[in-house]
Length: 277
Image (cartoon, rainbow, N blue to C red):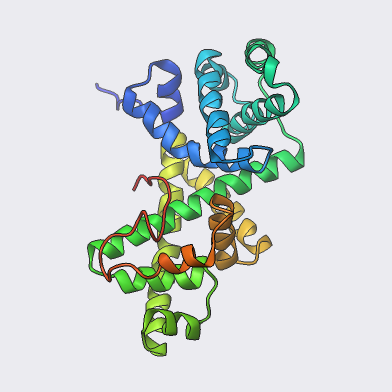
């Protein structure tokens, strides 16, 4: 009698002997959230935030924190990542000269976190959720461009990310009012569907098979609560883009909408990290 092969989650594989692709997937999933978290916790620019991110992953690896977390799952993975990133960012602010030594000493000796202060947990979840939203917008944009749907992307960007009215969008993009309404309704629906799919794929990577549905239901409800607290999907996506690139002139914003009609514009209109589908 043969038994089905046990499916290891991504974190279990990372802890037991990861492939290069496993590690790259983990980095793709959490580089953006940790970068946003660092930007909101003292990093003066993206370069400094990326230093915090890189050191977070380095600390996780060198101190074998993922191995310890798998062996004793007292809290969510996000709790561990937030605790490490928070410590690194805080230590950089307090004593840059003693930074490297203090982090390594803490990682080797500290107990794994079981909980976080509410402000830490909320701040890190916001960074994670905003990153998921922005990645999903990027994914939807790529899908439309592949189908020559550039107008859908430009309408989605102007309405959702820039907060322009229907009339303003129609005038800027030289479209009819009714076209803007139709394109936005279609793109908004596609975005909502893809958010659910991207979230489910994320849960699949990090949960055992028997935990996937309950974990997804919990995460989906938490994301819904987050969106409600932050003014709905439109406001949350807009905040995500503003946090990612807080200094943008009116000329830059207009340039993002003025490119060739159907050429891919992931670098000039909508930018963000990769999304696994």
